[in-house]
Length: 596
Image 1 (cartoon, rainbow, N blue to C red):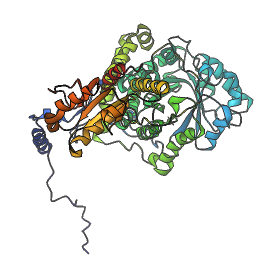
Image 2 (image 1 turned 90 degrees about the horizontal axis):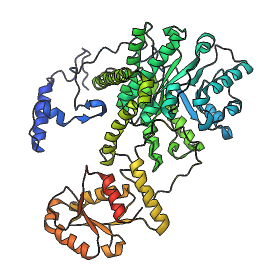
Image 3 (image 1 turned 90 degrees about the vertical axis):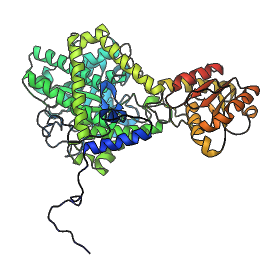
């Protein structure tokens, strides 16, 4: 047995370091073989992935991709966390959202891992008059309570404070947030609210915050990460101005705010967004005279939750929760996997709270402070996102501030433009949605839940990634209910399996995304279909496509597709291929089939 000397030498010491130029030269060679004669930075650009807000994710990051010094955890600019110890003491605050207090669900969550409560009150949730009953049995000196009451925020706050007094909770033991968010309410409903009083919290309840800066309305309206950051920053600045004009110091005013962000399954973007948000807020409070760390509440994105194959939402929320934890969120809410379908059942609530528990207790995710820190990619992405968010913040400020941008329609238009661009990617499946636009399952049994209270409306729209495909699937479901069968398409596999398997799988996947059942067995006449799609290799198409297309039309096919790039294919009426507008193709196909 050979023992290596303990002299600190690297096992790779005899191998020279590869240079960036050497790597790029190899990339250029590979691209040339693929038919792309590019060199220099163009070679790297060819492998880059465009992101929203004009950013790009490059194929390689090195020490040359310098970013500003993120500082130390717990110190300005707080990029690496708002506290020196991070979440290492006990993990992040596991905060569960409740719109109903029936069947003891609040206590059940607290007894099984949840550490704070987010109560939606008023028309969209629990009646304010039922707050006392909802918190029956809850130790209010141990479990922080966060209110979300919209137009009834004042009544809800008074009810909670009265409950603290009634139960003898010491003022310095009360924890949570009264949930005043007048600009967030206006974004949701279009209706302005009077500004919230915060002096009582600042002077009497040191652990209780008065205001929430909720960025979810902008995320749910289709906004990008930078737009979410910019809108939240503009809202926070507006609240700082109001609070200081009311007599609070900047430090007191900043201490009354908690920021709420969406955590998505794009883990690196979520990590960078939370880190950039702390940096931006540190800059605002620094120039205001009292640098402070931003308190963050991350919520798994409602936009990414799907109604079809909702079980996949468990994977999405797990990745989002991991990203929120790594990004340094103080509190995390995991929406149940059936959130888009109505009120969650006991199993869904259990999975939601256990997602955080497993990441904290079994994966020990909170034991490392800012585990993404030092990554060239994450640090660069954080810096780029901070600049993009600051630019959007400045755009809002130039419009007169958050309230003015909301009322003029500027913010709505900006968010709509971003969502329109993203909708195009979803339609072309450049942004795949597993279980919906990719790998759909037409035979799945629907998951049915009791309807949830209707959320407030009248302001910014609420969008979902699955909405275009959901509309197509709903048409298919209606046809199934009326006729006993789904609309069908016959997939004609030409040549040997090696030639047709890939495109047969592609076409089957695509048509099922629109609720159209693919038929691959038997003849066209036996399939019950009215349209067909040829599936094979380009070489086989040259030999057989025209003849087979003619036979299919003679057999009654009203429309013949070919799975492959558009070309000169006699008898073929349309093409389906990677990057085609799947939503437009599927919608037109259902129209021709008479599926309304």
